[in-house]
Length: 443
Ligand code: GDP
Image 1 (tube, rainbow, N blue to C red):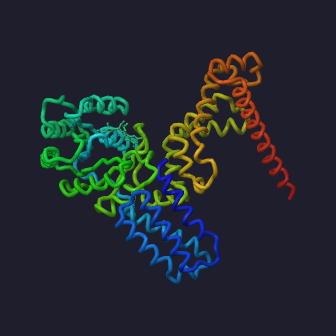
Image 2 (image 1 turned 135 degrees about the horizontal axis):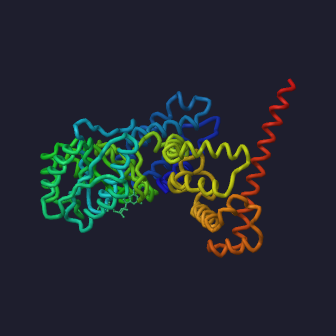
Image 3 (image 1 turned 60 degrees about the horizontal axis):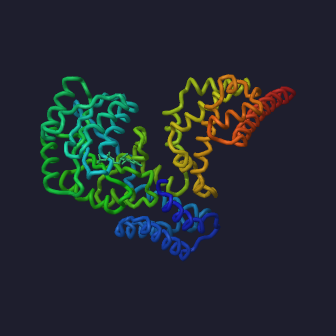
């Protein structure tokens, strides 16, 4: 999970200050030593760590913090604010001013450039009502063009390609002309990466830049490569004048070194974070929300946005009615499971809930994901009648369902019991709230 290691270390370093009525300068100093180690271990650039710790220390030993009623909380607040600043402060948005606006995707091979081009197109259409055109300019990596075309199909957006015989500069130029003719308002140009930075690649990218005059030049880097990602960003920025960075594979980056150092080292803002392989796993990068996630304070805003994007309002209303009238069936249950799934991996979601970092057993969440899969398989093995009237599921049906779903009869029993318990609870809530209303009427 993103930042898991860093998050644990930082939280344990700061936990000692929390809840104390009095905090001395020495306490702050000792906590800061641990914070420093935690950041270095997370592969944050050492100069960045040095500056960060000295800024936090200076503010934390100030009178208004140590003399406050909740000094420990105040120190954590300072750390939160400084982490936010470190990652760029305010969210840095795309500036798409030209018509059509051009986004140039650059980066080394394997960083996730092609995938991110597809994700970004999907994001711009879904969240900003744009009509993006994807341009396949990576003519060197075998299968990159095909990969973009598959992605385009998946998100139902057109891909402009001239095969691998034309030069990338020509492809970009013709792609832009095609976009103008076909009223696309955004053009996303995928370019060729190399294994290492070399002059030929830079020359080619400069050539494309000159021809299409991009509004945005986004560098895609793999967050899991830590400081290497930062070095790559520094070099690209020197040559290309980047407008932003996209950090991919943040879902697997437990350390967070790149996320915390890129802006401070290169002065180039992180605009998006890749959180998985799926096409909707791209999040606008909000420094303040990231800081909160790292400190275990959760990220309720992103969670709500995800819920809004993936939960069908009509269905939610329908569900609410069914729960109220106790018509909730296994079919609805399955629907719910799917909606939760659409929001992303379970452990990512829980990471956004405040305080979840400290909950024991967070590491075993993989197991919970398996529970969901099991529940889904069991419900799928039920007939329509069984899903609607679970009362009919007798012993022989249970055996059949277990066999069909590759689970055991105990698993099936457990799920049915949980479901029945849930229904009973809903009934109780229902009568409780009725009782309350009646009770209130007496006064
Ligand atoms: P390119 O050579 O830069 O175009 O890289 P690709 O787009 O082909 O991506 C390389 C690999 O990284 C692919 O297997 C992608 O599925 C994977 N990938 C890209 N972005 C992410 C991400 O945010 N999270 C994870 N887990 N995998 C990613």
